[in-house]
Amino acid sequence: MIVVTGATGNIGRPLTQALADAGRQVTAVSRHEAAVPDGVRHLTADLNEPAGLKPALDGAKALFLLLSGDLHATGANPADIIRQAADSGVRRVVLLSTLGVVTRPFGHTRIAMRALEDTLRESGLEWAVLRPGGFASNALWWAESVRAHQVVAAPFGDIGVPIIDPADIAEVAAACLLEDQHAGGIYELTGPEVITPRQQAAAIATALGSPVAFQELTREEAATAMTRSMPAELANDTLDILGSPNAAELRVSPDVRKVLGRAPRSFADWAARHVAAFR
Image (cartoon, rainbow, N blue to C red; front, top):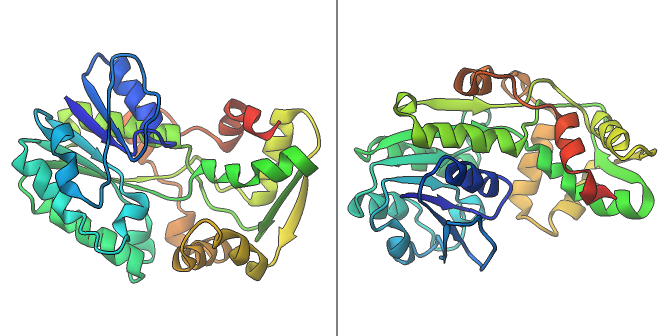
């Protein structure tokens, strides 16, 4: 049995499907009820309360751990999840971390994630750590404005980073859960090229087959919009990266190819597969 947390999100959903397609028993864990692939068991649990994961972890041999906002919730102690997994007999944990633990290690978010990485490495379990950069799926923030006004509004229109398709993260996670050679691996996951917001807007337009304009926002305008859906600290951290990426954040990593034997998918590929969201 393999347990997937965050199982209904942009990474967890394709990961759950990939594991089911590989013939593995899967327990999909999410905070709310949701549809899952045929043959997959679904359980609701709040990762802020690790004891609630016990029914999912009993009998499991591997765990994909995606915390998202649960890492920073009041009173959260995500290290308890790793201890709960070990106590339940889980042998392998694949942790979704962030590239920021090496590119900008001193922010509160990255300090907390680095501490969780350290806890996992010291746990006695088999482990692998995935460190993605920016996600192609963040472009879904623009879906409403594209549908309504044929406009992408974003800051730093001509500054890019090598964003990654979440489906590639899911495939790498599946390999780490299923294949022994990835034990102890730390993989930095990026897309195949640096791409700017203006170029992303053009790729969405190509996928749609109709024009999409680009409107450049100031940093302040972007921060106001972002803090409606995320903590201000995280919004500002994200804008720091988008506005002034350092050399490590601009680097195109070879790790997707190393694990999967192929290049990572392009943003244009992601846009073509998700074009319905922008119609």
